Length: 500
Image (cartoon, rainbow, N blue to C red; front, side, top):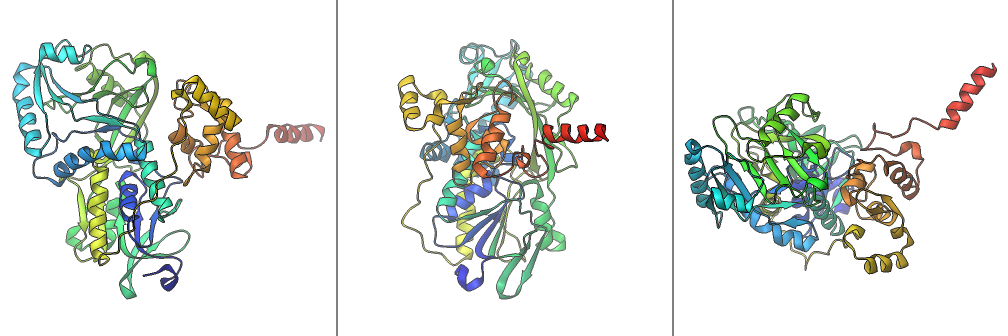
């Protein structure tokens, strides 16, 4: 089907959701001759679960053997390193440790080892106390042994989601932001009609990658006895400054016991230390607030596996939501009785890890439903990453400034981000349209002061580059405008009242 024949708002495939799963699927589908569109409710990609998670690549030993989650976890973990190298995404295979602090719980460690091997995870083994302390000097004094998984890794989730989306965009996939889907109905000619604020959008195939809202779309098209339940599971985290980033060398998990699953302590690719999350089932699908009790729980549980975590270096706390369903497995495939409607739902942890595998799997389902579209000669590469001046040597930085003087004007002191980087973050395919959009692309505002210094300047650059009034610049889309008005106007109005 061509767009011209079917109308401007008709596509071969529409993907609902521009998180890491939706963007991975979009990138894989952009390999084929088809019309494709991504509808996203928020103002940018990577605005939901994909921006608020543990930023790790699970090795694959945790999921129950035989589940789709287990199979895709190992496959995704194996694909991730090569994908990140191809897309210039920060990725480090640092390995992970699951720490046992009680000899009475050692059977649990052995069971986890057996499960991991059954799932196909390579090089797993149990390390005893002395080797564990050599690997991780700040491990708890109570630690007796740990499961060592050298294939565990960390990744930059913002870069990954953006790189997948940019690649899809330069290869012909259309992205529509601020486009929540409020209804799905079957219409003549075998098409699906999706209701959006900008009018109906039609598609031969719909991919439901709507995160914590995926059940709402599924339940619009399924049989009464096939309803899906997705509960938002909140996870709260502490982010520590780069001064604390070397406190652990690997991702450190607690061994799940009768007292719960515990929290993890891990370095990030940006040099910070990340500690969390909690696991709280809540009713609010927008409930990303943090609580005193939840953050205190993280502090308490972290101390069970890692000693001396320097929480005095905390620079931020945040919460994210995972799309949990009671069966604790991914829901991927065509919905029975709804031909051409494909679920990619209940993608909770290890959802980030499985993104490359999900992209391949769902793209395969879509291509089969579309009758085998022809494959293109190859993917056009996304534009090269924005230069990170914090990682350049003096000569390289000087050469860059000679070409673009804006790269010599530092905007964010904490992360050493320049005006040129902010400009390029806005000018890229699917460029930033908010302060948070800039932050995800070039890290302005991610440092110790959390945007206290750079936010006004970033807002000015956004207004200039987008050709808009400064009063319309937002933190994260409509409703989060940074300015209510001009101070001079307020003073003038006040002076006029006094004069009267």
